[in-house]
Length: 254
Image 1 (tube, helix red, strand yellow):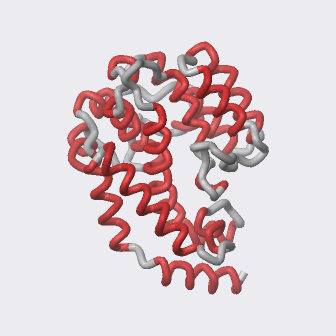
Image 2: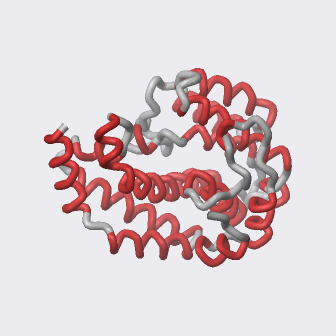
């Protein structure tokens, strides 16, 4: 499915100039993340999260010209290429992180954040550290956090870095929980990472997921009300009791 700038505006509240720039961006040659793709923003969360998040950064004070610059696009594409190499089993988690940090170093404007983020990502499994706003309780929800390295390249006295991090987890919690909802039974069969399987191990699993989605909606309400409305609507359609009962049945059958 092909998303237009108008789709991004109406469905996700993305600024038309930002949407148009992403939609018209050529697919980077040799980039494994876009492997066999012919368009830059197909209708999959792993791609359309980029213009949504770029729009959020501009809303939070980032310079639009920087966010839409070729250098910033190339940094994001470097990060996603390495992430795809990890997903395809070509490199380990730590090899992925080290290669991203090395390639991102020339672009860094937020050195303190870069250092703190590096320490978080260089854990064998990315887990939230005490007193840090990085990470969630579920490793499977932290699997996309290498993309946060791109925040190190966003400067400016008006830029709200703290809310940009909160916005990232708001967006990723929503998108990854929905993705894992659709993949749950396949992930059980293949023993793949899934936040619902992580949560199922916790006695308060249902409340934890509900709280995180509610928190996502509240953060997004501050940044992008259109996205907040989407989260609210999707939450109204999810029956977590049925989902977790289904998970238990499937796990017991395997």
